[in-house]
Image 1 (cartoon, rainbow, N blue to C red):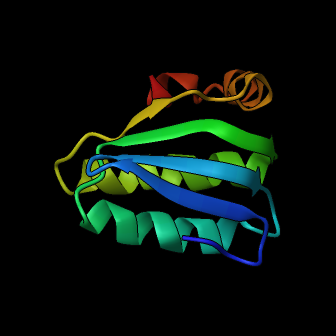
Image 2 (image 1 turned 90 degrees about the vertical axis):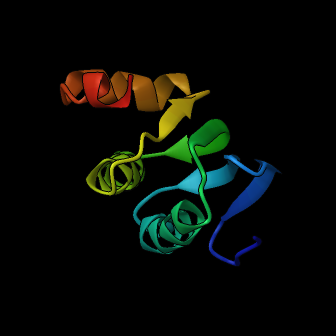
Length: 99
């Protein structure tokens, strides 16, 4: 899925979705909506290696997607988290929610 908001989702396998580009205050709402739709299609792994920039809103977007999957009895595994996002998750003490 391409968007004009600075991020792109790519289906790598039927169960793996890769996120590319920016996850920030400007893109988080649209990204979360797209991730929710992907979760409905059975995505089990979210690959963030292609995220070029993120802020707390981007982290919140990922956390919300994980929480939503958990709420539906599914596990969403997060891989390839960029160092800056991982550091922010550690500072906010939410990194264990993404492990």
